Length: 398
Ligand code: OGA
Ligand code: NI
Image (tube, rainbow, N blue to C red; front, top):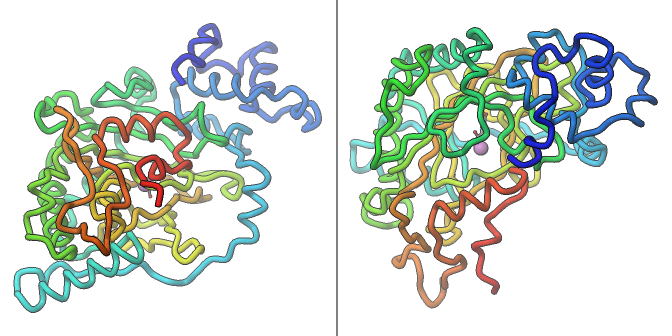
């Protein structure tokens, strides 16, 4: 990925549109449509289009700030995908909503655990309400992310990178050079490795205070969810926390600008999350969809609610009892939409061996996955387009 971007270090940056040469380059790379479509087809060079977008460091918001009226070609989904989309039916189902206010009474806790078991097994997704994070903390986190993405573009450009080792990074489409079509989305990610805590000064000032506050709450909620999930697997309540499934975390703060032609592209291509568990905060616009019975189901925003989904790694250690389910975000005419995913990734350094939990293995239920270390799995995931699953790499042949 990195190599292909080094091949065109000479490409102009933000003032790409200026002058005849710049205009030709924009047409050739599909970042501009002021040319007949026949000429565009002939001249279109995807690799150069991606590079021109990448070196602009302005992300998708840079394009919408410039007033693009059409979705540039690098974002347009392949024809077979668009054709499939028009055939697919949409469902009116709802992912389960679980009220966590009942977890302190023993009878009512059992009911919650049952709901979690069914949701984690059948849907891989649920929403939680009365989870203990105050509404103002959620709202301020969304506002902080909005401030970050809407600040002076030059500040964001200085943080733009594809280097996964950077703890705090701004970027657009981490799988830009691997995917078939780019997504209509920019992202700020903040990694919180457990052993070596992040210096607060590394968090952008525009969202620093709100992020620090939100992390405290969402970390606690993660522990509570791992307790409920342990009980749902009929393990001791602290089993998943003893495995330190929530140890290393990342806050991934997405900004989905309004899109002029939303039916041609996606905000986030279909994927599963390469982590143990994800807690997602979304604003009230909507756009997240999950696959259920081969249909896309909208995850309706609930004021004060949070979306929880099982990641690949929890599917593996639960030995298929919980499911990591495909989901995506559609692009929308209205916008921006903001969401914040908190990924709970387990122990990364020093490498820790995880595998199907022994207590869940028996003669009738043999292991269906290999053991793994988290960093190897992540590396596999990030070395390809996100819409290709990595789970098969750990699945044992039956
Ligand atoms: C993710 C994700 C969905 C959303 O970050 O992995 O699926 O609605 N996000 O932003
Ligand atoms: Ni996801």
